[in-house]
Length: 596
Image 1 (cartoon, helix red, strand yellow):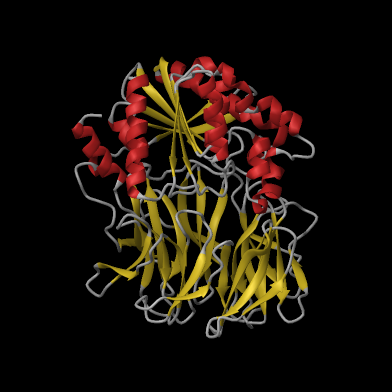
Image 2 (tube, helix red, strand yellow):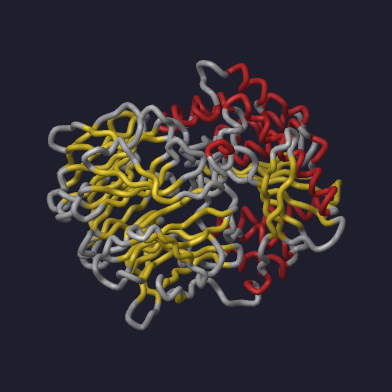
């Protein structure tokens, strides 16, 4: 790239965003995460509304969890991107941070503060690499106690209001789970919901008196909806509010327990509203900017805190006055620059795939006929491309590319039926969707047939490799980031904690090896006709680096055009700024070479 373009790309990549706001106890204060210094850290606002560090860790901060009073906080951090969170405690707003839950060879997932603030709960795979048990830790003594063991993936969501139990989630499949109330002393559990109906349950909110609670579930439904349950008969849930087309994402019970704030995923953007429990009334919030909302929390009876991101907002924290429908921007982390003024909102389209299925996609930067096109495929696979800021998409759009980001079958956000359309031996149907997306872009958006590229991360990397091996004539260039080249070797080498759940989606080593061999990109490398650029992190615990190494070795033996770049200090995500710069500079140079 020319020096001017390199400078612009750096500004795109370093555009800062704030996310994951967390209210601090009873105070009208909050923390948030932001990558202001090269890797994500915890920040807050001082009395002059200026950003200042809440604490500074040597590695990235993945979460901050304040005690009910806000007098103590847990900081979660890992090492070089390996996702193995360790917990540190601070009691003076981050000035002094001490070790609390440390076992660096193991994963830890935070499970909430006890009401009396003396203990925390967490899940960890210490007993067996593939099993996550529930632990309780005394924050004063550091003494840990195993309170629940299970030979699967389990997590704690919150404590019961009397402090004697936990609400725990047990994974059943790649998307489904069960909720249980765990009595810590006896070890006995009580089911929440119907165990005979496959379902998702999350976003649990308990009433102060401990008599009942609210949650989001799709038990017996296609889309996620708001339901209630009582502690006396928790197996019976009652639906309160539902949308037949879209999923409820998150709920938060107001301090006076009169309403539930909720966000609804409407085609990849969020709708924010409040459901008034007594009146069965919904008030939609119109004043907040369009985008994706997360980490909802109430500052008081009427004021709601939310993280907001969109295609043109890398991230900022907003306060919403619910009754008045007035929104105020609290942080100004998103830049106000000449580069930011070039960011574009995507247009939402859909195409008809081979079997008549309507598949949605966002299209960025469409300007004229015969544009080069980049297709960006999301990971997961149970994920979703949403109306969120992506620096590379925005930079490519500014460089004259049209960028299409599809939510092929198997994506979240469109109901249970849609997300299961690519399970196991239906895997290649989602790859066929990409074929029909290219047809739609050529026929309806005048894309340049000979200049279509594809890129994707993680499972999106597999989609890239599957696309260039099964539809080799469509593409002019391809980028695979931490992708899967063979499901058999991936399942053999990924962390045991992931294998069982991933087998629910991809198929099992016991029953589906023949299918893995049939579709594996690694077995069809002779069909690859396009230049391929590959990136991977050495510390990746999800998709082992061997997936990239075996593919590259095979292609090099065939004298194919392939380049592999391994980051020794990264895991499944790319976190460090210098690595972001190198990776995305290479991607843009690569695409300019082969697509323009």
